[in-house]
Length: 399
Image (cartoon, rainbow, N blue to C red; front, top):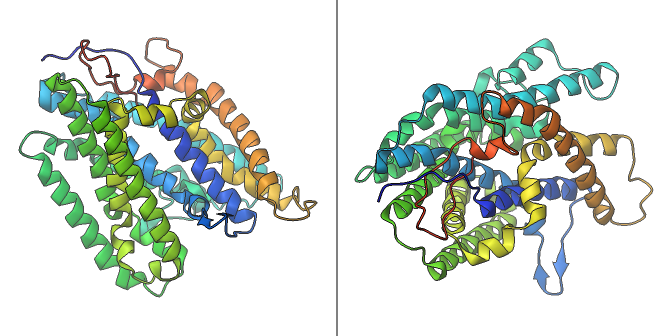
């Protein structure tokens, strides 16, 4: 069946992105509020807070899924070859303007005495996204921005990896990703085993150490594109089951990370497999959500999470500096007792406001350059054609 373009958003995935951004924010507020157990009767809910950093795993896998859709469509249906020039222009438009604006604002505030003024080398390294790049790297001005270097590394190699998104070759991508990831982590860990944990994070989580996670998203995109191209009506019961399987696996990983925290960075087997397994769990959820899972719609397809998904990049970038400022100025010191219930709504409200301003005045104008005017042009960045006859399918949105 030939494919027809349809400019629609995969709303469940937009909401999932919003959830991931919110989850990272909750984690950092939980840490700043002084970490403690969160229980409900006999249930230990602490991993839902202590493992909020796993929102980044969702970001990475979702990014790989969405950006791979045009390449999978090309391989399976003979769609037009994605323009490499257009691909790079969109990646630059999506990441650098908001990031550079933040660097300018943080540097200006530091010059006024709010924060630490970066050295020239540190500022240059952050501008070049070398804030997480081995011996050439520099300390990130915004601690959470180390993930930008990892993601941008994936952008560089995606067009090459996309060669294997075709029948009879996709499994080579899976094997390559697993082999490269394991080789990197097994070789690097002995070199940093005695280093401080933050340095172990930087060393192990360079692009080679997360390739299996990105590959999981790419293969989910291939499977989704193949299902759409086949013209088969989506089986909602099957997709619900796949979503629940992905969520169950992810939950098991969260609790495993929580209860092995004392040995995880000492060389526990999860250190070498956690992110890859999280990528598989997320890939299952992405495929199910894209194919019309009712549970995915119920959980993630709502106005609040979709809006957070829309401004998620700004929310991710700004929540941590905001939290640092509020803490440094002792805004929450008046609270007598556990501060999390007070801190969380304040940080979320202020970070959402800054993210909305960033989206409206920085990201959106840049995203509109060179494209037909649209309310949310980032949703049109990479589209996959969907058969008009498939009622449960949506065209893919981009990051």
